[in-house]
Image (cartoon, rainbow over all chains, first blue to last red; front, side, top):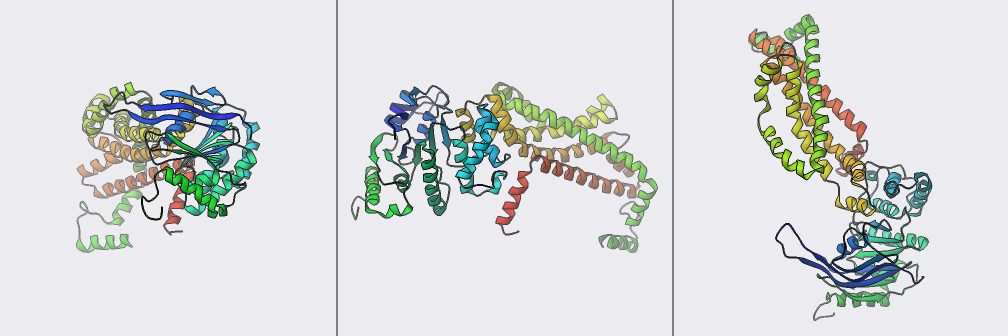
Amino acid sequence: MSQRTVIELKDVKKLYQSKVVRRPAVLALENVSFEVKEGEFLALVGPSGCGKSTILKLVSGLMPPTEGVVRVNGVEVRGPQPDIGIVFQFPVLMEWRKVLDNILLPIEVLELDDLDYRQRARDLVALVGLTGFEDKYPLELSGGMQQRVSICRALIHDPPGLIMDEPFSALDEMTRDAMNVELQRILLERHKTVLYITHSITEAVFLADRVAVMSARPGRILKVIDVSFRRPRSLRVRAMPEFVDKVEEIRELLGLLDPGGSG
Amino acid sequence: MMIVVWEGMVRLAKIPEFIFPAPSRIVDFYVKFGYTLTEDTAATLMETVLGFLLAAVLGVVFAVLLVYSALLYDILYPPLIVLQVTPKIAIAPLLLLWFGYGLLPKVVIGFFISFFPIVVTTVHGLTSVEPEMLDLLHSLRASKRKIFLKARLPHAVPYMFSGFQIAMTLSLIGAIVAEFVGAELGLGFKIVYSQYSANTPMLFAALGLLAVAGLVLFYLMLFLERLCTPWRALKQEKEFAAQGFL
Protein backbone atom coordinates (compact mmCIF):
# COMPACT_ATOMS: atom_id res chain seq x y z
CA MET A 1 0.00 0.00 0.00
CA SER A 2 1.55 3.30 -1.05
CA GLN A 3 1.32 6.49 0.90
CA ARG A 4 -0.62 8.43 -1.70
CA THR A 5 -3.93 9.81 -0.50
CA VAL A 6 -6.86 9.30 -2.82
CA ILE A 7 -9.75 10.72 -0.82
CA GLU A 8 -9.30 13.38 1.79
CA LEU A 9 -11.59 15.46 3.95
CA LYS A 10 -10.09 18.17 6.11
CA ASP A 11 -11.98 20.18 8.73
CA VAL A 12 -15.13 19.76 6.73
CA LYS A 13 -18.31 21.32 7.91
CA LYS A 14 -21.63 21.07 6.12
CA LEU A 15 -24.57 23.23 6.97
CA TYR A 16 -27.85 22.71 5.15
CA GLN A 17 -29.73 25.96 4.87
CA SER A 18 -33.09 26.17 3.23
CA LYS A 19 -33.46 29.49 1.42
CA VAL A 20 -37.05 29.00 0.43
CA VAL A 21 -38.85 27.53 3.41
CA ARG A 22 -38.42 28.86 6.91
CA ARG A 23 -36.66 25.94 8.49
CA PRO A 24 -33.77 26.01 10.95
CA ALA A 25 -30.42 25.23 9.37
CA VAL A 26 -29.20 21.66 9.79
CA LEU A 27 -25.59 21.09 10.75
CA ALA A 28 -24.90 17.75 9.13
CA LEU A 29 -21.14 17.55 9.54
CA GLU A 30 -18.84 19.29 11.97
CA ASN A 31 -15.08 19.27 11.75
CA VAL A 32 -14.76 16.00 9.84
CA SER A 33 -11.26 14.97 8.79
CA PHE A 34 -10.06 11.67 7.46
CA GLU A 35 -8.20 10.26 4.52
CA VAL A 36 -8.21 7.12 2.46
CA LYS A 37 -4.85 6.04 1.11
CA GLU A 38 -4.31 4.25 -2.18
CA GLY A 39 -5.48 0.65 -2.07
CA GLU A 40 -6.99 1.14 1.35
CA PHE A 41 -10.46 0.15 2.49
CA LEU A 42 -11.91 2.66 4.95
CA ALA A 43 -15.28 1.89 6.49
CA LEU A 44 -17.46 4.64 7.89
CA VAL A 45 -19.80 3.54 10.66
CA GLY A 46 -22.29 5.65 12.48
CA PRO A 47 -25.88 5.94 13.64
CA SER A 48 -28.64 7.02 11.29
CA GLY A 49 -28.49 10.65 10.32
CA CYS A 50 -24.82 11.09 11.15
CA GLY A 51 -24.11 12.59 7.76
CA LYS A 52 -22.87 9.58 5.84
CA SER A 53 -24.82 10.38 2.69
CA THR A 54 -23.63 13.98 2.98
CA ILE A 55 -20.10 12.65 2.82
CA LEU A 56 -21.00 10.69 -0.30
CA LYS A 57 -22.26 13.85 -1.98
CA LEU A 58 -19.21 15.84 -0.91
CA VAL A 59 -16.73 13.28 -2.17
CA SER A 60 -18.50 12.78 -5.49
CA GLY A 61 -18.64 16.53 -5.96
CA LEU A 62 -22.41 16.87 -5.98
CA MET A 63 -22.32 19.39 -3.17
CA PRO A 64 -19.66 21.76 -1.84
CA PRO A 65 -18.64 21.82 1.83
CA THR A 66 -19.68 24.85 3.84
CA GLU A 67 -16.17 24.97 5.30
CA GLY A 68 -13.09 22.86 4.89
CA VAL A 69 -11.58 21.03 1.97
CA VAL A 70 -12.45 17.87 0.08
CA ARG A 71 -9.72 16.47 -2.13
CA VAL A 72 -9.60 13.59 -4.57
CA ASN A 73 -6.17 12.55 -5.80
CA GLY A 74 -4.72 15.63 -4.22
CA VAL A 75 -6.93 17.99 -6.19
CA GLU A 76 -9.67 19.96 -4.50
CA VAL A 77 -13.12 18.85 -5.50
CA ARG A 78 -14.86 21.73 -7.25
CA GLY A 79 -17.57 19.94 -9.15
CA PRO A 80 -18.89 16.51 -10.03
CA GLN A 81 -16.16 13.89 -9.85
CA PRO A 82 -16.15 11.07 -12.38
CA ASP A 83 -12.99 9.93 -10.58
CA ILE A 84 -15.12 8.44 -7.84
CA GLY A 85 -17.20 5.41 -8.73
CA ILE A 86 -20.42 5.13 -6.77
CA VAL A 87 -22.36 2.10 -5.59
CA PHE A 88 -25.67 2.86 -3.91
CA GLN A 89 -27.83 0.96 -1.49
CA PHE A 90 -30.06 -0.12 -4.36
CA PRO A 91 -28.71 -1.30 -7.72
CA VAL A 92 -30.46 1.54 -9.58
CA LEU A 93 -29.94 -0.07 -12.95
CA MET A 94 -31.73 0.98 -16.13
CA GLU A 95 -34.52 -1.53 -16.62
CA TRP A 96 -34.58 -1.02 -20.35
CA ARG A 97 -30.92 -1.82 -20.87
CA LYS A 98 -29.27 -5.20 -20.80
CA VAL A 99 -26.58 -5.91 -18.23
CA LEU A 100 -23.64 -5.06 -20.47
CA ASP A 101 -25.18 -1.77 -21.57
CA ASN A 102 -25.87 -0.87 -17.96
CA ILE A 103 -22.24 -1.44 -17.10
CA LEU A 104 -21.15 0.71 -20.04
CA LEU A 105 -23.26 3.70 -18.99
CA PRO A 106 -20.34 5.72 -17.51
CA ILE A 107 -18.38 5.16 -20.73
CA GLU A 108 -21.25 6.58 -22.77
CA VAL A 109 -21.71 9.59 -20.54
CA LEU A 110 -17.98 10.32 -20.47
CA GLU A 111 -17.95 9.91 -24.26
CA LEU A 112 -15.13 7.43 -24.21
CA ASP A 113 -14.62 4.89 -26.96
CA ASP A 114 -17.18 2.16 -26.53
CA LEU A 115 -15.19 -0.49 -28.37
CA ASP A 116 -12.25 -0.35 -26.00
CA TYR A 117 -14.45 -0.87 -23.01
CA ARG A 118 -16.72 -3.66 -24.21
CA GLN A 119 -14.13 -6.28 -23.47
CA ARG A 120 -13.36 -4.71 -20.14
CA ALA A 121 -17.05 -4.84 -19.31
CA ARG A 122 -17.10 -8.54 -20.13
CA ASP A 123 -14.06 -9.07 -17.94
CA LEU A 124 -15.81 -7.33 -15.07
CA VAL A 125 -18.87 -9.50 -15.57
CA ALA A 126 -16.65 -12.56 -15.28
CA LEU A 127 -14.90 -11.09 -12.24
CA VAL A 128 -18.17 -10.74 -10.32
CA GLY A 129 -19.27 -14.21 -11.36
CA LEU A 130 -22.05 -13.26 -13.77
CA THR A 131 -20.74 -14.80 -17.00
CA GLY A 132 -23.63 -15.67 -19.26
CA PHE A 133 -25.83 -12.86 -18.00
CA GLU A 134 -24.42 -10.10 -20.18
CA ASP A 135 -27.48 -9.96 -22.42
CA LYS A 136 -30.12 -10.29 -19.74
CA TYR A 137 -32.32 -7.50 -18.50
CA PRO A 138 -31.89 -6.43 -14.85
CA LEU A 139 -35.36 -7.72 -14.02
CA GLU A 140 -34.16 -11.22 -14.85
CA LEU A 141 -31.55 -11.04 -12.10
CA SER A 142 -31.84 -11.37 -8.34
CA GLY A 143 -31.11 -8.44 -6.02
CA GLY A 144 -27.60 -9.66 -5.24
CA MET A 145 -26.84 -10.15 -8.92
CA GLN A 146 -28.14 -6.69 -9.79
CA GLN A 147 -25.95 -5.18 -7.11
CA ARG A 148 -22.96 -6.98 -8.59
CA VAL A 149 -23.79 -5.38 -11.94
CA SER A 150 -23.84 -1.97 -10.30
CA ILE A 151 -20.40 -2.70 -8.85
CA CYS A 152 -19.18 -3.44 -12.38
CA ARG A 153 -20.69 -0.17 -13.53
CA ALA A 154 -18.79 1.68 -10.81
CA LEU A 155 -15.54 0.05 -11.89
CA ILE A 156 -15.80 0.22 -15.69
CA HIS A 157 -14.05 3.55 -16.16
CA ASP A 158 -11.39 2.53 -13.65
CA PRO A 159 -11.85 5.40 -11.20
CA PRO A 160 -9.09 5.86 -8.62
CA GLY A 161 -11.61 5.76 -5.81
CA LEU A 162 -14.83 3.97 -5.01
CA ILE A 163 -17.52 5.04 -2.62
CA MET A 164 -20.04 2.45 -1.53
CA ASP A 165 -23.13 3.52 0.39
CA GLU A 166 -24.54 0.55 2.32
CA PRO A 167 -24.46 -1.52 -0.88
CA PHE A 168 -25.67 -4.74 0.70
CA SER A 169 -28.10 -3.51 3.30
CA ALA A 170 -31.09 -4.26 1.08
CA LEU A 171 -30.15 -7.92 0.82
CA ASP A 172 -30.97 -10.79 3.15
CA GLU A 173 -28.31 -11.84 5.64
CA MET A 174 -26.99 -14.89 3.81
CA THR A 175 -26.70 -13.09 0.49
CA ARG A 176 -25.10 -10.20 2.31
CA ASP A 177 -22.44 -12.43 3.86
CA ALA A 178 -21.74 -14.00 0.48
CA MET A 179 -21.47 -10.56 -1.11
CA ASN A 180 -19.03 -9.42 1.59
CA VAL A 181 -16.74 -12.30 0.69
CA GLU A 182 -17.22 -11.61 -3.02
CA LEU A 183 -16.44 -7.93 -2.58
CA GLN A 184 -13.27 -8.73 -0.73
CA ARG A 185 -12.19 -11.03 -3.56
CA ILE A 186 -12.99 -8.44 -6.24
CA LEU A 187 -11.16 -5.67 -4.44
CA LEU A 188 -8.12 -7.81 -3.73
CA GLU A 189 -7.86 -8.53 -7.41
CA ARG A 190 -8.27 -4.92 -8.49
CA HIS A 191 -6.46 -3.05 -5.71
CA LYS A 192 -9.16 -0.42 -5.41
CA THR A 193 -9.35 2.42 -2.93
CA VAL A 194 -12.68 2.25 -1.15
CA LEU A 195 -14.72 4.47 1.14
CA TYR A 196 -17.43 2.17 2.48
CA ILE A 197 -20.44 3.43 4.37
CA THR A 198 -22.39 1.04 6.55
CA HIS A 199 -24.62 0.70 9.57
CA SER A 200 -23.27 -2.76 10.32
CA ILE A 201 -20.29 -2.76 12.65
CA THR A 202 -19.58 -6.41 11.92
CA GLU A 203 -19.52 -5.75 8.18
CA ALA A 204 -17.23 -2.76 8.66
CA VAL A 205 -14.70 -4.68 10.73
CA PHE A 206 -14.83 -7.64 8.36
CA LEU A 207 -14.18 -5.65 5.22
CA ALA A 208 -12.02 -2.73 6.29
CA ASP A 209 -8.39 -1.87 6.91
CA ARG A 210 -9.52 0.98 9.10
CA VAL A 211 -12.88 1.93 10.55
CA ALA A 212 -13.85 5.56 11.08
CA VAL A 213 -16.53 5.83 13.76
CA MET A 214 -18.90 8.77 13.44
CA SER A 215 -21.11 10.41 16.01
CA ALA A 216 -24.76 11.27 15.62
CA ARG A 217 -25.70 14.59 14.04
CA PRO A 218 -23.79 16.85 13.83
CA GLY A 219 -21.47 14.17 12.48
CA ARG A 220 -17.93 14.11 13.81
CA ILE A 221 -15.25 11.48 13.58
CA LEU A 222 -14.98 10.01 17.05
CA LYS A 223 -12.09 7.68 16.33
CA VAL A 224 -10.38 5.82 13.53
CA ILE A 225 -9.62 2.23 14.44
CA ASP A 226 -7.08 -0.01 12.75
CA VAL A 227 -8.22 -3.46 11.71
CA SER A 228 -5.30 -5.67 10.95
CA PHE A 229 -6.65 -9.13 10.34
CA ARG A 230 -4.86 -10.96 7.57
CA ARG A 231 -6.40 -11.11 4.13
CA PRO A 232 -8.16 -12.85 2.56
CA ARG A 233 -10.51 -13.04 5.52
CA SER A 234 -13.05 -15.82 5.75
CA LEU A 235 -16.38 -15.28 7.46
CA ARG A 236 -15.05 -17.36 10.35
CA VAL A 237 -12.80 -14.51 11.40
CA ARG A 238 -15.93 -12.96 12.86
CA ALA A 239 -15.92 -15.51 15.66
CA MET A 240 -12.34 -14.73 16.68
CA PRO A 241 -11.99 -13.00 20.05
CA GLU A 242 -9.91 -10.18 18.54
CA PHE A 243 -12.67 -9.53 16.04
CA VAL A 244 -15.33 -9.48 18.70
CA ASP A 245 -13.22 -7.09 20.79
CA LYS A 246 -12.93 -4.66 17.91
CA VAL A 247 -16.66 -4.77 17.32
CA GLU A 248 -17.35 -4.15 20.99
CA GLU A 249 -14.85 -1.31 21.05
CA ILE A 250 -16.75 0.39 18.26
CA ARG A 251 -20.10 -0.32 19.85
CA GLU A 252 -18.91 1.28 23.05
CA LEU A 253 -17.78 4.36 21.18
CA LEU A 254 -21.21 4.64 19.65
CA GLY A 255 -22.78 4.33 23.09
CA LEU A 256 -24.63 1.18 22.16
CA LEU A 257 -23.65 -1.10 25.02
CA ASP A 258 -25.96 -1.72 27.98
CA PRO A 259 -25.37 0.87 30.68
CA GLY A 260 -25.43 -1.85 33.36
CA GLY A 261 -25.63 -5.62 32.94
CA SER A 262 -23.09 -7.66 31.01
CA GLY A 263 -21.86 -4.77 28.82
CA MET B 1 -74.78 -20.52 -26.19
CA MET B 2 -75.76 -17.09 -25.01
CA ILE B 3 -76.82 -16.25 -28.52
CA VAL B 4 -79.18 -19.21 -28.66
CA VAL B 5 -80.75 -18.23 -25.37
CA TRP B 6 -81.01 -14.67 -26.58
CA GLU B 7 -82.78 -15.78 -29.79
CA GLY B 8 -85.10 -18.07 -27.89
CA MET B 9 -86.11 -15.44 -25.35
CA VAL B 10 -86.95 -12.83 -27.93
CA ARG B 11 -89.10 -15.14 -30.02
CA LEU B 12 -90.97 -16.69 -27.13
CA ALA B 13 -91.67 -13.42 -25.41
CA LYS B 14 -92.47 -11.76 -28.71
CA ILE B 15 -90.35 -8.75 -27.82
CA PRO B 16 -90.86 -6.07 -30.43
CA GLU B 17 -87.92 -5.66 -32.69
CA PHE B 18 -87.40 -2.02 -31.96
CA ILE B 19 -86.66 -2.72 -28.30
CA PHE B 20 -84.53 -5.84 -28.37
CA PRO B 21 -83.94 -7.64 -31.62
CA ALA B 22 -83.06 -11.28 -31.99
CA PRO B 23 -79.57 -12.18 -33.13
CA SER B 24 -80.93 -13.52 -36.38
CA ARG B 25 -82.28 -10.09 -37.28
CA ILE B 26 -78.94 -8.49 -36.46
CA VAL B 27 -77.07 -10.94 -38.61
CA ASP B 28 -79.59 -10.30 -41.32
CA PHE B 29 -78.81 -6.63 -41.07
CA TYR B 30 -75.08 -7.21 -41.31
CA VAL B 31 -75.57 -9.29 -44.41
CA LYS B 32 -77.75 -6.74 -46.17
CA PHE B 33 -75.99 -3.56 -45.12
CA GLY B 34 -72.54 -4.72 -44.10
CA TYR B 35 -70.69 -2.67 -46.59
CA THR B 36 -72.02 0.70 -45.46
CA LEU B 37 -71.17 -0.18 -41.90
CA THR B 38 -67.62 -0.76 -43.09
CA GLU B 39 -67.47 2.85 -44.23
CA ASP B 40 -68.81 3.99 -40.88
CA THR B 41 -66.36 1.86 -38.94
CA ALA B 42 -63.48 3.17 -41.01
CA ALA B 43 -64.62 6.75 -40.40
CA THR B 44 -64.94 6.33 -36.66
CA LEU B 45 -61.59 4.55 -36.42
CA MET B 46 -59.89 7.26 -38.42
CA GLU B 47 -61.34 10.01 -36.21
CA THR B 48 -60.25 8.15 -33.11
CA VAL B 49 -56.73 7.39 -34.26
CA LEU B 50 -56.07 10.86 -35.64
CA GLY B 51 -57.37 12.53 -32.50
CA PHE B 52 -55.21 10.22 -30.43
CA LEU B 53 -52.07 10.76 -32.53
CA LEU B 54 -52.42 14.52 -32.29
CA ALA B 55 -52.80 14.25 -28.52
CA ALA B 56 -49.88 11.83 -28.27
CA VAL B 57 -47.43 13.99 -30.17
CA LEU B 58 -48.48 17.32 -28.70
CA GLY B 59 -49.01 15.81 -25.27
CA VAL B 60 -45.53 14.36 -25.00
CA VAL B 61 -43.93 17.58 -26.27
CA PHE B 62 -46.03 19.57 -23.82
CA ALA B 63 -45.04 17.28 -20.97
CA VAL B 64 -41.34 17.70 -21.76
CA LEU B 65 -41.76 21.47 -21.81
CA LEU B 66 -43.53 21.40 -18.46
CA VAL B 67 -40.77 19.35 -16.89
CA TYR B 68 -37.91 21.43 -18.21
CA SER B 69 -39.26 24.88 -17.57
CA ALA B 70 -40.55 25.85 -14.19
CA LEU B 71 -41.82 29.04 -15.74
CA LEU B 72 -43.84 27.26 -18.40
CA TYR B 73 -45.14 24.92 -15.73
CA ASP B 74 -46.53 27.80 -13.69
CA ILE B 75 -48.05 29.41 -16.75
CA LEU B 76 -49.43 26.37 -18.51
CA TYR B 77 -50.59 24.01 -15.78
CA PRO B 78 -53.61 26.06 -14.55
CA PRO B 79 -55.22 26.33 -18.02
CA LEU B 80 -54.55 22.63 -18.45
CA ILE B 81 -56.56 21.91 -15.33
CA VAL B 82 -59.37 24.09 -16.61
CA LEU B 83 -59.32 22.18 -19.85
CA GLN B 84 -59.51 18.91 -17.99
CA VAL B 85 -62.33 19.66 -15.62
CA THR B 86 -64.52 21.12 -18.33
CA PRO B 87 -66.46 18.32 -19.96
CA LYS B 88 -64.99 18.44 -23.42
CA ILE B 89 -68.03 16.97 -25.02
CA ALA B 90 -69.89 20.10 -24.01
CA ILE B 91 -67.98 21.99 -26.66
CA ALA B 92 -68.88 19.52 -29.36
CA PRO B 93 -71.80 21.62 -30.66
CA LEU B 94 -69.50 24.64 -30.81
CA LEU B 95 -66.89 22.77 -32.76
CA LEU B 96 -69.47 21.51 -35.16
CA LEU B 97 -70.63 25.04 -35.71
CA TRP B 98 -67.12 26.15 -36.53
CA PHE B 99 -65.82 23.17 -38.43
CA GLY B 100 -68.84 21.51 -39.93
CA TYR B 101 -69.94 17.94 -39.95
CA GLY B 102 -66.81 16.31 -41.29
CA LEU B 103 -63.70 14.73 -39.90
CA LEU B 104 -62.07 17.74 -38.27
CA PRO B 105 -64.36 18.44 -35.29
CA LYS B 106 -64.25 14.77 -34.27
CA VAL B 107 -60.46 14.78 -34.37
CA VAL B 108 -60.37 17.99 -32.34
CA ILE B 109 -62.62 16.54 -29.66
CA GLY B 110 -60.61 13.34 -29.58
CA PHE B 111 -57.52 15.45 -29.12
CA PHE B 112 -58.94 17.54 -26.30
CA ILE B 113 -60.15 14.52 -24.39
CA SER B 114 -56.92 12.53 -24.75
CA PHE B 115 -54.51 15.35 -24.13
CA PHE B 116 -54.56 15.59 -20.35
CA PRO B 117 -54.03 11.90 -19.48
CA ILE B 118 -51.06 11.76 -21.82
CA VAL B 119 -49.49 14.89 -20.34
CA VAL B 120 -50.02 13.77 -16.76
CA THR B 121 -48.63 10.27 -17.21
CA THR B 122 -45.69 11.49 -19.27
CA VAL B 123 -44.78 14.16 -16.72
CA HIS B 124 -44.97 11.53 -14.00
CA GLY B 125 -42.70 9.24 -15.97
CA LEU B 126 -40.17 11.97 -16.70
CA THR B 127 -39.96 13.11 -13.10
CA SER B 128 -39.89 9.75 -11.33
CA VAL B 129 -36.35 8.69 -12.20
CA GLU B 130 -34.59 7.45 -9.05
CA PRO B 131 -32.60 10.25 -7.38
CA GLU B 132 -29.60 7.90 -7.12
CA MET B 133 -29.55 7.51 -10.90
CA LEU B 134 -29.58 11.29 -11.26
CA ASP B 135 -26.77 11.55 -8.70
CA LEU B 136 -24.76 9.02 -10.66
CA LEU B 137 -25.27 10.89 -13.93
CA HIS B 138 -24.46 14.23 -12.32
CA SER B 139 -21.27 12.82 -10.82
CA LEU B 140 -20.27 11.82 -14.35
CA ARG B 141 -20.88 15.41 -15.45
CA ALA B 142 -23.77 14.50 -17.75
CA SER B 143 -25.47 17.44 -19.45
CA LYS B 144 -29.22 18.02 -19.07
CA ARG B 145 -29.68 16.75 -22.60
CA LYS B 146 -27.86 13.51 -21.85
CA ILE B 147 -29.82 12.99 -18.67
CA PHE B 148 -33.02 13.50 -20.61
CA LEU B 149 -32.16 11.17 -23.47
CA LYS B 150 -30.47 8.44 -21.46
CA ALA B 151 -32.56 8.39 -18.31
CA ARG B 152 -35.75 10.44 -18.21
CA LEU B 153 -37.14 9.61 -21.61
CA PRO B 154 -36.62 5.84 -21.57
CA HIS B 155 -37.88 5.74 -17.99
CA ALA B 156 -41.04 7.57 -19.05
CA VAL B 157 -41.95 5.21 -21.90
CA PRO B 158 -43.99 2.70 -19.84
CA TYR B 159 -45.80 5.60 -18.19
CA MET B 160 -46.53 7.12 -21.59
CA PHE B 161 -48.09 3.88 -22.71
CA SER B 162 -50.41 3.88 -19.71
CA GLY B 163 -51.47 7.31 -20.83
CA PHE B 164 -51.81 6.13 -24.42
CA GLN B 165 -54.10 3.27 -23.44
CA ILE B 166 -56.41 5.61 -21.57
CA ALA B 167 -56.19 8.25 -24.28
CA MET B 168 -57.12 5.85 -27.07
CA THR B 169 -60.22 4.75 -25.20
CA LEU B 170 -61.21 8.33 -24.48
CA SER B 171 -60.58 9.39 -28.05
CA LEU B 172 -63.00 6.74 -29.23
CA ILE B 173 -65.63 7.98 -26.81
CA GLY B 174 -65.02 11.52 -27.99
CA ALA B 175 -65.42 10.55 -31.62
CA ILE B 176 -68.70 8.75 -30.91
CA VAL B 177 -70.15 11.59 -28.92
CA ALA B 178 -69.15 14.08 -31.59
CA GLU B 179 -70.91 11.89 -34.09
CA PHE B 180 -74.01 11.92 -31.91
CA VAL B 181 -74.02 15.68 -32.06
CA GLY B 182 -73.61 15.94 -35.80
CA ALA B 183 -72.18 13.77 -38.52
CA GLU B 184 -72.77 12.19 -41.87
CA LEU B 185 -70.80 9.07 -41.31
CA GLY B 186 -69.59 6.89 -38.50
CA LEU B 187 -70.72 4.28 -35.99
CA GLY B 188 -71.95 6.90 -33.54
CA PHE B 189 -73.88 8.53 -36.32
CA LYS B 190 -75.43 5.19 -37.26
CA ILE B 191 -76.43 4.62 -33.65
CA VAL B 192 -78.26 7.93 -33.49
CA TYR B 193 -79.74 7.40 -36.91
CA SER B 194 -81.09 4.02 -35.94
CA GLN B 195 -82.68 5.64 -32.91
CA TYR B 196 -84.57 8.04 -35.18
CA SER B 197 -85.61 5.36 -37.62
CA ALA B 198 -86.37 2.81 -34.88
CA ASN B 199 -84.04 0.42 -36.70
CA THR B 200 -82.79 -1.39 -33.66
CA PRO B 201 -81.01 -4.23 -35.46
CA MET B 202 -78.83 -1.55 -37.03
CA LEU B 203 -78.21 -0.12 -33.59
CA PHE B 204 -77.01 -3.45 -32.28
CA ALA B 205 -74.98 -4.04 -35.39
CA ALA B 206 -73.24 -0.71 -34.92
CA LEU B 207 -72.69 -1.40 -31.21
CA GLY B 208 -71.17 -4.75 -32.01
CA LEU B 209 -68.75 -3.20 -34.47
CA LEU B 210 -67.96 -0.49 -31.96
CA ALA B 211 -67.01 -3.09 -29.37
CA VAL B 212 -64.82 -4.83 -31.91
CA ALA B 213 -63.20 -1.54 -32.89
CA GLY B 214 -62.47 -0.79 -29.24
CA LEU B 215 -60.90 -4.20 -28.78
CA VAL B 216 -58.79 -3.88 -31.90
CA LEU B 217 -57.44 -0.51 -30.77
CA PHE B 218 -56.75 -1.86 -27.29
CA TYR B 219 -54.80 -4.83 -28.56
CA LEU B 220 -52.98 -2.71 -31.09
CA MET B 221 -51.76 -0.48 -28.26
CA LEU B 222 -50.79 -3.52 -26.21
CA PHE B 223 -48.79 -4.86 -29.15
CA LEU B 224 -46.98 -1.55 -29.61
CA GLU B 225 -46.22 -1.45 -25.91
CA ARG B 226 -44.71 -4.93 -26.00
CA LEU B 227 -42.63 -3.84 -28.98
CA CYS B 228 -41.27 -0.75 -27.24
CA THR B 229 -40.80 -2.19 -23.78
CA PRO B 230 -39.90 -5.86 -24.11
CA TRP B 231 -38.52 -6.08 -20.60
CA ARG B 232 -41.87 -5.42 -18.98
CA ALA B 233 -43.13 -8.80 -20.02
CA LEU B 234 -40.39 -10.25 -17.86
CA LYS B 235 -41.47 -8.14 -14.92
CA GLN B 236 -45.00 -9.42 -15.16
CA GLU B 237 -43.83 -13.00 -15.46
CA LYS B 238 -41.80 -12.52 -12.32
CA GLU B 239 -44.75 -11.09 -10.45
CA PHE B 240 -47.03 -13.90 -11.53
CA ALA B 241 -44.43 -16.48 -10.60
CA ALA B 242 -43.99 -14.88 -7.22
CA GLN B 243 -47.68 -15.30 -6.56
CA GLY B 244 -47.58 -18.92 -7.54
CA PHE B 245 -49.39 -18.69 -10.84
CA LEU B 246 -46.58 -20.16 -12.92
